[in-house]
Amino acid sequence: MLWLFPFVLADLVAPFEVIVPDKQLKAIHGNPAILGCRFTPDPDISHLVVTWQRQEDVQVVHSFYYQMDQLDHQSPQYRSRTFLYNSELAKGNASLQITEVNPKDTGGYMCIVTNSQGSARALVELTYGALYSEPRLSIHINSSAIILKFETEGFPKPELNWLSKQGENLTHQLEVIDLTDDGLYFIKSSYVAQRQMVNVTFTLKNHLLNQNLERPVILIYDEVTATNQAPVAVIILAMLCIVLFICIIILTLWRRKMQSSSTATNYGVM
Image 1 (cartoon, helix red, strand yellow):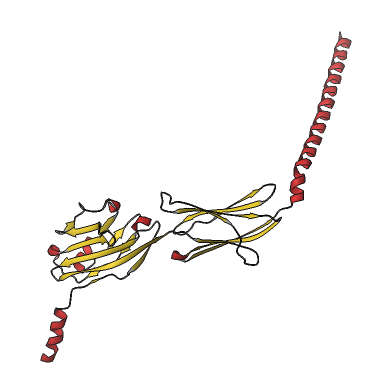
Image 2 (cartoon, one colour; image 1 turned 90 degrees about the vertical axis):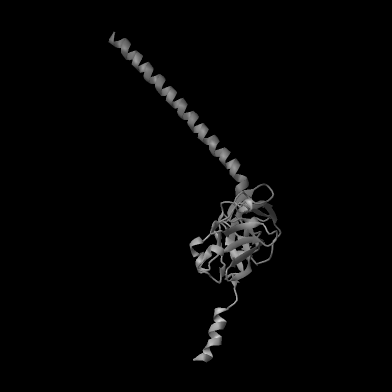
């Protein structure tokens, strides 16, 4: 059995490693982001140093040494938003959780670990997305056109189109209001229809989160009826006023007649 000794020795001197299970990670709005990181463990964490840094500017995201979190040099951007699973460090788990993820958090994160076994690092790329809310439709009608407008919020900027019944791209207007306090884009998109019948489809694609929305709009607008609505309403109102006026006259005459009869009766009793 002596021939097995070299292989056992090779296992004992295996190199120190830091591994990230997901090198590309998507953070979803409203959910915490967990940046996974594992390293060759040592049950004795007295010599353990874990540092998470931004790759772009090496700002400190989170640090652990002397067997406790060390946040004096933490970037203000991450203050009170990060934590390690300290009870898992002895098992080789240096994963970092970031809460309240926003667009500024996107980028590269270096997981740097040093213990009695060695030192190494690994990189995680974090992206951020938010599903777009159900588009809200409003319809505006004036003397020359019908204006359809959809409003919604999400992230990142989507691909928007208005399609005809035949699937052709239609000319439309797009307004993107900068990020809200929630880290979302506020999108307004409108289409101006010149015809009396509208049959179009509003489409939105959030490629990062594979979100595809299609909202058809079918509107039949009878211009003649709409134009005549006002005169008809005026005529009806005028007729109601005439009927009411006649009723008032009849009621007044009836009251006078009743008063006259009552007076005559009183005189007869005396």
